[in-house]
Length: 420
Image (tube, rainbow, N blue to C red; front, side):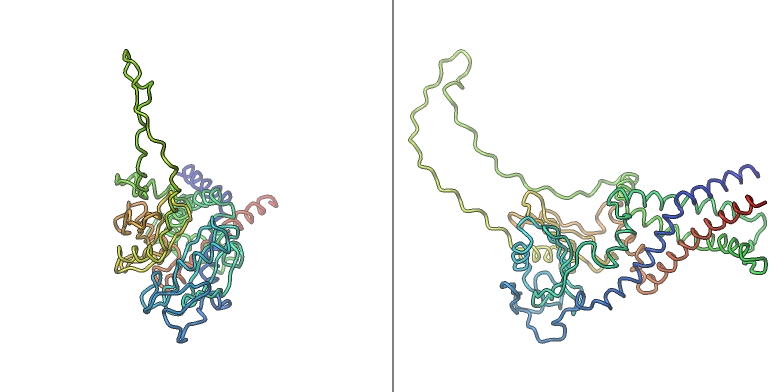
């Protein structure tokens, strides 16, 4: 029995020593993100609060470069009751500023008074903050500019892109092993267990008791945080869930193929074997035809209206625009029964014609994708509002404390052995 316990102890100890620093880092940065976002909004109101909020700007007011919104209380991209300029006018203006090959992700305001945020990927990468009623720019940030972006890059990928996400996913899954071995090592011989912390026997003993008791009491909640973090960090996990469920995977639709060119006429050498070449009648020389006018791109406003017609009860969460016409455009919709704050329902459109290729509601997606609507707000705490975000921040600090205290206890014990 003691030999088996020694195996569990070594497994717990060396897993923590190898990956514990990543867990400490994840806990601290996760807590910082919960706090940093509202602080960022408070320190930089120009980025998040529209200048026209509370003013008498009509819904059809003209923005820069003629980016005027249609009449009424809401433009094609905005939520009900939110004034919005023309998305097509903004696209033309942004293409002139950042190049015709730039891609833009439009995030319309969710409530009256918020700014329109646009993620730019082109000659410049970053976010623009515009007044939704006038189209006036209120500020811009580079992709890695600001405390929130800095902390998020560290928390989500260690600033190592996909490689960092895979490392963090492995560390998060390793926590499940830590939690299991920790419970095995804590498991009392007699019940009910003793959960008190002995403060009268020195600081090291008190820290040891706090490490064991805190890990057991909060182990399940921390496992939920780490498991959800692994899912969000590494996309293959969602594919594994779908595969295990046996359900078909939800994929993006493909564009309809263009009409095939007519078959070439027979040539004199195309006769059947054993027959003389065919004598074709002389064809009158055809005059060269002028090139047809290029097809006018579909307006983003029309595409947005198509998406809203597909989900009349929803509002646009993200409009993912790319100038390429060889792939569908995606518009993510926020519907009332979707717990995801950004919406997971998606409308796929043909950028050449504006036709709807597919409208996928969030609860009709494959299981590995569908649970994202719950896992994302659960991991960030948004599922429980302010109380949920506060709990997530505390759990992040607790995770960092458990990791730090475990490493310190190991170092203290090793030092005592060397001195003895």
